Amino acid sequence: MKKVIFTLLVMAGFTFTAQSQEISKNAIGLRLGDNDGFGTEVSYQRGIGDNNRLEFDLGWRDNERFDAYRITALYQWVWNLDGGFNWYVGAGGGLAQVDFDDNIPNFDDDSETYLYAAGDIGIEYNFDIPLLLSLDFRPEFGFGDYNDDVDFDIALGVRYQF
Image (cartoon, rainbow, N blue to C red):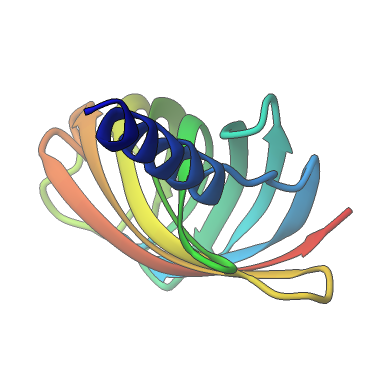
């Protein structure tokens, strides 16, 4: 019986060791996606532990109907799947500003600033070189006249780690 318990403890120790990884202290790059007019974002990640990090994104979009800017902040938990593959979840929110063209019907104001709450789930691959590729899904819950519903954002992230 002692051998079985010892074997289980050793296997559990190897499992926890295999699951631990160090995420990069800093990563900066682009997050390319689309969410009701929002597209490219400059993205910065700051590691705050072995498995946690903060992510800050500054996004903008410009088309014939409106110009939009937003900033997002997320807290993320990161877990290792295998080798360089990680998956992560996060929660946070942000602030957005939309400036509409005056010729759009059903909008009395020509600009709006609103808050939103966001979740985040994704997968990433950490290469041996300082490159991090990620694919994530981010539901966002807006609190404003323009964006007062749930939007879904899917994006590809390309970041340089340092």
